[in-house]
Image (tube, rainbow, N blue to C red):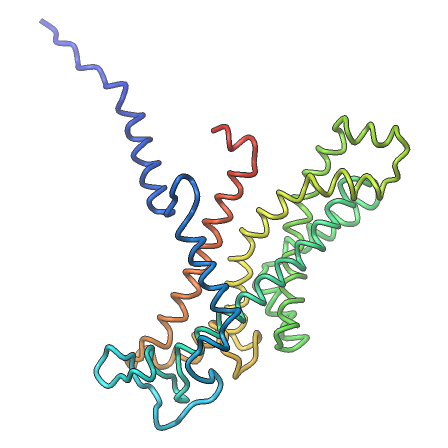
Length: 305
C-alpha cells in the first residue's frame, strides 16, 4: 500500500511571516507601528545639542595634561570628575561627546535642509518645465550621481578648506542630486493630474502652479528623503572629520574624536573610539528607522500593505 505524505499545514507560512514581522518590529523598537525608541534617542540627542553649554561638566576644548588617558569612572584609575574618561590632552570625553552632538546635529540638519531646498527646487523646475531645462538639469544630475559621494566630498573639502560652514555647503552640493531625481519623478506624474490641467486652463502662470499645486504635493517625499539622508550626511561629516578635512580641531566633532583616539585603541584606551563610534551609530540608526517609518506612513500604497 502506498502511504500519502502528510500535507503541509496552510498556517505554517502565515505564522512564519507573522513571526518575522514581530521580530522586525522588536528590532526596530516599534510600538503600535511608531518607532518610539529611535525617536526618543533623537530627541535626547537634540536636547543635548541645544543645552550642551548647561549639561557639559567642563570645557570640551581645554584639558589638563596631568589627567591624560584617564579611564571611565567605573574602571580602575577612573574618577567621578571624568565619568567617561579623558583623551590624550586630558580633555573630558563626556563633554566632547555632548558638544559633538551639537556639531553633528547642526551640520547634518543644515546640510539636509540646504540639499533638500536646492534639489526640490531643481526637481520641480525640471519635471514641470521639461524641454531644454529638463535636459540640462538632468544631465548635470547624472554627472553628479556618477561621482562617488565621499570621494567628491573629500575633493571639495580639500579645495575650499575645513570649516563647519564649508562642510555644510559641501554636503549640500554633493547630495542635492538625490532630491532632484526623486522630486522630478513625482512632478512628471503630478503635471498630468486633473487639478494641474484645470489650473492651466484657468490661466494660472507656471510659477503659480509650481508654487501652489506642485510643491505641496511633493513635500511629503522631500521630508521622507530628508530623514533618510540625515544618517548619510552625518556619516559623511564624520568621515570627513576623521580624515582631517571636516570640522577643524579643537572643535569636538565625533569623527575627529575617532581620529584622535585611533592610535590609543591598541594601547587599551578603548573609550576614545568606542564611545564616539557608538554615538554615531545610535544617531544614524535612529534617523534611518524614523525615516523608514515616515516613508511607510506617508506613502498611500505602502499604507495599504
